[in-house]
Image (cartoon, rainbow, N blue to C red; front, side, top):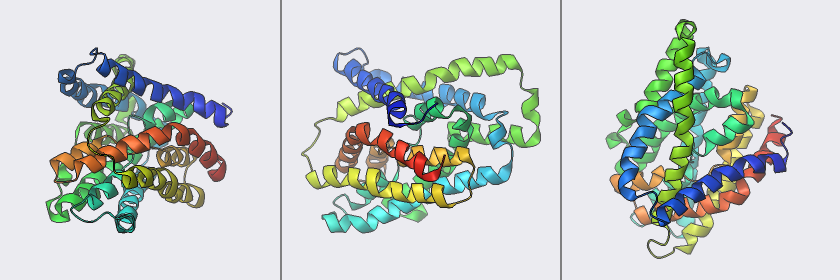
Length: 312
């Protein structure tokens, strides 16, 4: 594939169109709010683990421990760095503790590392999906320690929640690879997991779109949040991601994963984190909406430029 801007745009746009379809389904009553919990549980507990098994078990790119540790370490470090950087920048734009500073930091630092990144990586670099999942191991740990820990205090951070169904599936799949047991997984199992896994991302992206439709227009607009969150999340923080991909001796697959992660908007999950752990929910909502809208334009630009920069 010729990875110029136009070809990357053709991959990124369907993700956002699917998201818009989810928003339209919500507005028309086709996708009702009461269905969200059961559908998201289905995606997280069954469909996503199936996708992980199908893409990680037997994948040559994730057969050895050292590159897995490097990917997970970068996933943790880059997210933690983004959260810390935004925390120290936030007062300069008028955000104080108790008025959204910590939530703004977490929301800008934690990108949509899963259901927006997966279809883009899968379309552009299908061989890198296994590496993407190992990268998310570190991101998950950063979410529940550096992210939630900033809201609750590090001593109260619920880091055990990082051991959720997708993470446990990644760990089990890697164990199968490291022990050689992956060779004994029957083809019929792979085919079944492939069918189930194919449903995971479209369903999740539809639900993300529906959630954004629910949140749109809630609360008074804080223009400083709406303006500065895309600048930080989509403009400044990606510099650290791209610098790591360009300067460190990493595999081509990991470089590509990092470039895609650099281009991602704020994770919708940040809103739930803010609501559950004493954050400023309205700030999280505005960061998510602002960065998602702006990323419709910036994501293919950052990916195209980043791939040339890192030589991937």
